[in-house]
Length: 351
Image 1: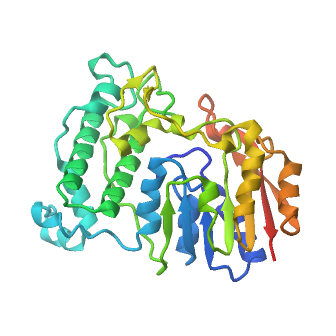
Image 2 (image 1 turned 45 degrees about the vertical axis):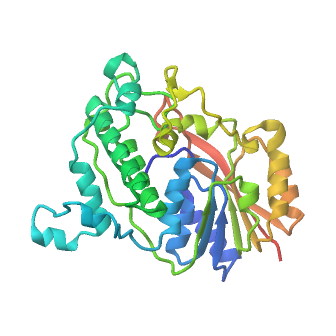
Image 3 (image 1 turned 180 degrees about the vertical axis):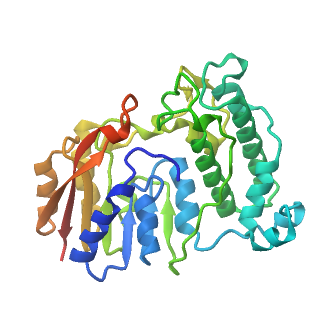
């Protein structure tokens, strides 16, 4: 899945252990800072009903694709209009409709457009996020998805699924160290590989899961057993760091500016959790909105909200506990594996 700052893939065993030990019998979980849904997907896979939220459009596509959907999209209105046969009949028989649609898109010829002009080394943009070939293929795929939507051939969830697959594919060939605030000076090995669209797997938890593109304080107003919080812990604004995936989703033609190509005309909604003077009160407000029986917070020891403040907030709901973790830290100049950060997991039973 797409690379994302702060992905909790490595700490899933610790999070799961805490919830299974201290919130035994929990059947539902809310993740208001969903990102690419690493934690939400894990607990959906374990059978929990899941509710997610985030402010970014890219996150919303991953939410709809991996959390809202319990089965692979069938593309019933689209497939009759396309030649979807695989290279041989035996292979075609075992492919899902989604895999066939993605294969059709992958075989389509590149068509240089917005991404090629603004985010490859073509036409003097100076931004080497993608090779010209991959940028042209991204352009072609994105234009085709928009056309299918406008023609009424795909619904919202089918569109979200295809866009999530495109964001994942584009990230795998992006010439970056992990975010889109800068590109590498020389072409990386992965950036020179051809764009490949892979079907994102879907897990069925036989529950009605809810997804939203809203402020975490709104998402937390729900009836769940477990509230899992992974708020931003510094001033790094993800809408800037992931501006290019946002542009691929919005497809609004916003003019890229500067070395990073961040659209100057787009209004960026900076989270209160990224602002030192507002982060603590924002967390306190969020906790006050939630009726969850059990709260888990993943936070950095040197984050904007002090350790004692978090403990005070949780102790107001019940007895707060915490454990220290050593995790990999993002740094654009040094290999992630070489850096360790000090994080904490807090938990509290609200009974």
